[in-house]
Length: 549
Length: 66
Image (cartoon, rainbow over all chains, first blue to last red; front, top):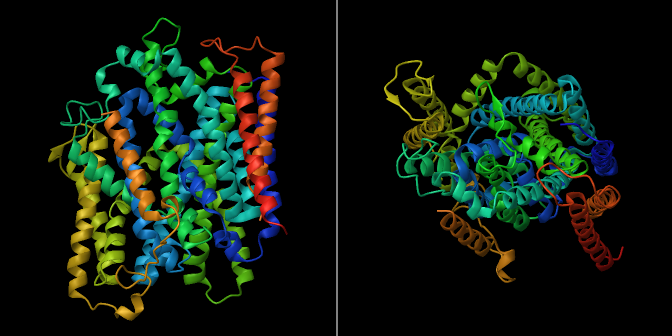
């Protein structure tokens, strides 16, 4: 794939706007709160699109179209059973406590609700994880540009990192969020035409369905047993593991996304952020998954398209870029590529802005230097932004050289994350749960995750203790690891809480359900009230699931 | 606070202008698998979207006299 001059003009135009937004917003930053929390002043349409975009990284675009080509429409479970219910839950039930507690971060909420050690554990693991995940996505993009355009790995990594650094350093979280919205719009406008062109060429949905195995055009029909579907997952593992533990764990407790909602200008806006984000999120599968399915159908037609190959097997990760090369002429190709770069940048900026907030408030201000004037923390926040980007570059190179280390790290982070939702659920909805309970519960959950991985095998992964159970796919294995980790954390937190002294109810006001006065936005049309809005989104979700059954 | 609809509108307006101009003056630019003038149609759509964003921003600014 080669780029024409017009493609470079488009790329340059985009970079100019991204940097310009950072430049204009630099004047709005005078306190650490402005820099790290956007001064809690953003309107809801901006926070909700940023809520989506911070998660819509390049890996998601490439990975989802790859899964679309590999598994078909059942990949949409990651949205329709995965993300959306969790987004509704965090908006309706959890945001009153995050936003209302005035905590500045998710770890800080844990400190207010439980104790210092629970916060410390969450802050440290989260900070490390964000640095590594932004490094991994940088690595993925560097690899892609190298492969597709022949750019050097170092050039693409350093250029993109420099631009992200420039606009987050100048305008802080507001600048990151503003750019995420622009990036989101660009991703949709850049990739929706590709989906339309590919599907039309493949003969529409019916034409596609006629050319590919039926299992690829149904999301639920083949979920009864793991042997029936290419994912190797059965319905309980899917709903409990992905739909409940993993999705709720991510969307409800990951500060990367929650931070966007916490930047909203009011409680009502904070609650509506994930609810409104859920509406476009529902339709993203049509842009990212459906082109992958269309690619399979096209490869079965005599139109001159074949699925990309590598080492004798299909190279699904290249599906999206090969489709772009087939359907986009110079000009639109530049837009598509810019969209890909944009998705990478929004993912990276999301990680960097979450990292600098957690480091500044939850690590530096808590353990290294408390009680300094705010000016000092603003400087620390800015410095941490630079350090965060530098560390991400480091991890990108680490990933390039030691692929196995990265796999191992991601595995370990998975162990740490899987039980987290049990801690928050009990923390927010059971006033009797205690700090000791939460902390031991988290450790028990992480241990249970590691043990499950050590005792089961799937696709030659895991089983480093013994191989008691064999799963048909690593996806099924991951879902079950999450289920065991969550259950262990849930049970142990309850048991230890009952054995330890509860905190006085007075201290838990604003932090726990039942002791908090959640204001209901009565009056006004239904679409401005969280409850009815969530119901409508839920109905749409059911319709989609049934439609593609 | 900067109204984000203004820079977004300007960005998509310029992008749409470049694309539709390219589609008009280089109509022979076609990708292998399509006969459509992708640049022209996408460019026109982007300009319409840009106009929508700018109109919203203009209406909001008029309501808020400061």
